[in-house]
Image (cartoon, rainbow, N blue to C red; front, side, top):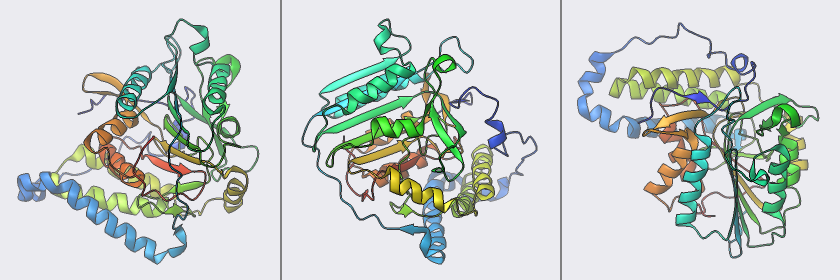
Length: 383
């Protein structure tokens, strides 16, 4: 089980607390209903997640049916991976800097070890800030050069894998392609001198112009990571495409699930976390987003290649740098490995569901999935 000591992977600036209306709240308390949870006993604790998950899905389906324009079905099939597999792993602990992290280099070793043990990977590059060779230190320029290396010469049937573990940030959007008015950023180890890498540049260097039939899978374990690749299509937990802001519905679903779990297992700590998540979604939802920004993203950021991103959290959230089983690690990276170890034959949609279930109640972050075109996600996860 994860310890109670966690940090977040947001850029070391004073802006993150202002984005979270509940972060500074010290008077959020929940009165235990121990008599009810005791009534359910051991069975309540055993089946709390199963029952609550089924109730959440039923409520979510009902709410979607009342707002049928909130989602649409994906229509395009992924190409098969038949060619080379090339992987880039980036982990930044920011040694000696403000906001130093502990688990990012461990994440690289863990994800790299798992993927290379379970999938064929032909070429690998690793950037971490503990290396002696200056070419493999995750500076701004080295990261951009590594993006170019990853995609260089890619053709139909090839598979490209990117795993990033480090700080993520956000800055004011200047070109009108962000619904929330903020661009997301990667934070290189030398960001104080060289600057951050804005998501527009990530997309341009890494995604734009990738040939049809190439698959790029990006695993982004950092704060504000939902749209780090600036992909236009966001997926719901049921594998549908989200075409309007649905966070208000998700907030309702999360609150109902939190209440159900609390009644069954009496776990106050998990209930408080889930209630905070649900309330945060309710407070941010309902605005419908910026449809002009969404339309611009679809026109300018759609891809011919099969580009898929699995991210640690929503753009408005932070991702945890945690202590799990005695090791410093990213909560999202750990959840990904744990879920795939339990079942390597999951579809992309099932993997998103299982990762959310693994983190739920322990962390407030909600893993997200996005793509560069309307890909059907009932394919088995593979790289």
